[in-house]
Image (cartoon, rainbow, N blue to C red; front, side, top):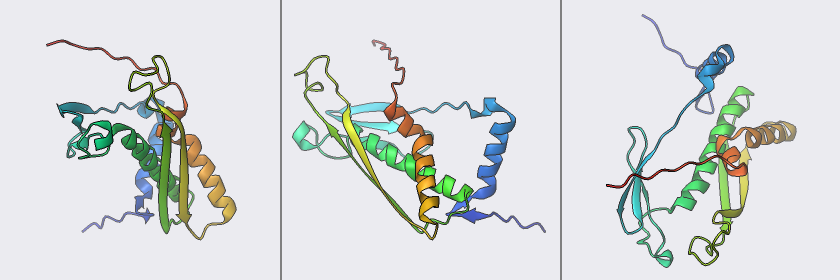
Length: 176
C-alpha cells in the first residue's frame, strides 16, 4: 500500500509548484501558455463569460450606468482579477520562501473618468486613471522578509504587468 503525501504550506502544494518551476527551467517552451474566455451577451448590459469548465461569470452595470446591477461590471472584474492574481503571487512566493501566511487580504480601488466611454471626450482615455492596492498580510516572518516578498509579488504579477504596460490588442468582427 502506498501513501500519497503532499507537503503543503499556505494550502499550496510545494512539490507541484517546485515541479512546475523545474519543468519550465528545463524546457522554456513550457512557459508559453494561452488562456481563453468566451463572452455571450444576454441583453441590456448583461453578459456572461465562460472559462474552461467553470460556472459562467456574470457581468452587468450598476443601475446608475443603465444596467440592472445583477453582477459586477467589467472594470470591477479587472480590479478583482488583479487582487486574485496578487493573492496567488503572495501564496506561491511565500510558500517558496517558507513563509507561513496566517491572513491575507487585498483591497483595490481605481479611478475612472466616464467622459470617453460615454462619447463625450472622443480620443480620450477610457481606462483607469490610477489603481491603488492595499495588502494586509499577517505572518510571523520578519518585516524585511515581508517587504522582499511584497516587492517580488508586485514585480512578477501577470495581471499587474498587463495593467501597467501597453499590451497589443487586436479585435475582429464577423457579421451574421
